[in-house]
Amino acid sequence: MRAARRASLLALTLSACHSSAPAPAPGPEASTGQMSAPAVTLERTPCFGSCPVYALSISRSGVVRFDGKKFVEHTGPDSAKISPATVDSLLAEMDEAGFYDLDERYTSGTPACGRYATDLPSATMSATDGNRVRRIQHDHGCADAPPVLSRLESRIDELAGTARWTGR
Image (tube, rainbow, N blue to C red; front, side, top):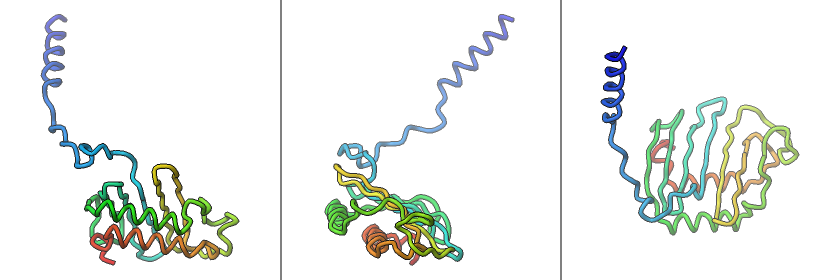
C-alpha cells in the first residue's frame, strides 16, 4: 500500500513539472493596455447558396481578427493590422450613420423587418465607442431594414480588408 502511494505521488510530482507548451508571448496590445473588447465586430451567416461565412473583430489599436468558416478562400483564424486612425474613422462613420440609434433586431417576425424573404444571409454587427455599445442583427431578407445597415457592413469589410480572406 505504501509503495503504491509513493508511486502515485512520484507520478503526480513528475506530471506537475512537465508543461506541454510554453506560455504564449503577450500580443502587441498587451503592452499598450488595449486588450479590451473589440471596437467593431461583424459576423456573416450562411444563405441558401454559397455566401461567405465568417466572423471578424477590430480592436481600437487596429488589430483585425478573422475567422473563416465556409465559402471563403481562407478558413480558420488569421489576423492583420489597420491603423488606429482608420478604426476611429470607422467608428465616427457608424456614429454619423445613426448606428447607435437603430433597432437591435431586423429579423423575421420583428416589427422592424417588414416583408420577409427566406434563404438570404444575415449579419450581426457590434460597435462600442467607449461610452455606448450597440449590437444589431440584420437578416438580409427583411425588406424594411434600413439600407444603412448593408452599407456599414460593407464598409467594415472594406476597411478591414476582408477580401484578402474571402476572395470577394
